[in-house]
Length: 264
Ligand SMILES: C[S@@+](CC[C@H](N)C(=O)[O-])C[C@H]1O[C@@H](n2cnc3c(N)ncnc32)[C@H](O)[C@@H]1O
Image (cartoon, rainbow, N blue to C red):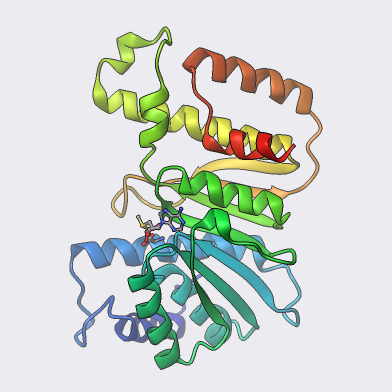
């Protein structure tokens, strides 16, 4: 998607503007990794939304946006390269970062980017977004963004979780201690179980979900993405049974389950 020379040149200049590359087109290890992550993420966003009419404004919500590198790239790509209208709401509870993002957006003249300093759980959107997404939203912030996606009936939800401290702590009393006595495996297992349970909750609420590696492990070891699209799901009873079994085996549920229960 970004292989045409013109597009690459344009993106490289943009990376200079948002300080992911210096004037000589160089960037350190962390920024190179961030560029790799956000380019891969954008490709997946584009696959999901490219079929929507270009005349209609895309509405996207970035949860736990941090310094918004991903959303700045997304906004640039749609407005400058794809030439289609887009509006992005960026949410983060860190006021310092959001103030910086706001100033950067003004400098770049990205007029349809909005920055909300708030907890994801406190954000209400009146309407149906095309996509709710997050990249490395910490711990239960991922559950909050998934819940926001469900509440707003977003057409698409993309989520790459980060640390799952709460799930790791809760995962006790299961029969696989031969695996989890190794801390590294314990973490990997908690990730797999946590994200599988989240995926099933989304499916049971009318989303088709697949779990993919969104970027190379060269750029991040936290590279597992839940990719969900609103659609028909017809095996809900079976999913419910699988969910209960998995939840009972590992003795924990993701916070998303609680958010959904308190709603009922
Ligand atoms: C690991 S950073 C990821 C930032 C960015 N998405 C990226 O990939 O570079 C996680 C961000 O989520 C924000 N965050 C964590 N919990 C949150 C919550 N409950 N509501 C809003 N923002 C939250 C933090 O302030 C932080 O900026």
